Image (cartoon, rainbow, N blue to C red):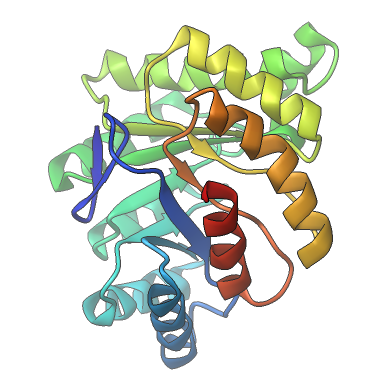
Length: 243
C-alpha cells in the first residue's frame, strides 16, 4: 500500500480516480478553481504540471489551499522534482525516459524519502530510453516494463519502495500487454491509463477497451482517463468504467 496525502493506493483498497489540471500552474487562482471542481466531481488525487521554477513556486501556494492530494508532474529537470517536493507535493511523477541520470534520481529519492512522498514511475511509450528501444526493436511492452523495473531497481538500491507504476501507450493492445507483463513481475501498485487518448468519445472507448480487461483481471489500483478538454469529464468516465 502506498499513501498519497492520506489516500491509500493498492493493498486491497478501492481503485482510486485521478485527473490532471489543464491550467497554467503559475495562475494559482485558476488552477485552484479547477482542483476544487475536480474534487467536487469525485476526483481523489489531482496531478499538476510543474514545467518550470515559477510553476514550482506557485505549486507551494496551491498546495496550501487545496483539499485534495496533489501530484507534481515532472519532465526532464531533476531540480524541479526537488523544488516540488519542498513545496509540499504529496507525490511526484517521474518519467524514466526523461530523467535517466542515476545520481540525480538518487537526490530526488533522498528528498522524497525524507518527506514521506511516494514517486510514480511513469513510463510512456513515446519516451522509452533509446537503449531499450534498440534492444527490443521499438517501444514495445517489453521495453516499457524493463524501463520501469530498471528504475525500480535503482530506488530499491537506496531502500526506497514507496512507488506507484504506470506503463502508458497510445496503443490499447500495447497498454494492456505492458500492464499484464508488469503485474507478473512485480507487486507495486499500478496506475492505469492510455496516453494521448483524445476527445471525449474516442477516449471513453479506448480507455474502456484498455482498462476494462485489466480491472476485471484484478490489475490496477488507480486510474486516469485522459480526455482533451474539461478534466471533470475524465472523472465522470473513470467512474463509469469502474461501475
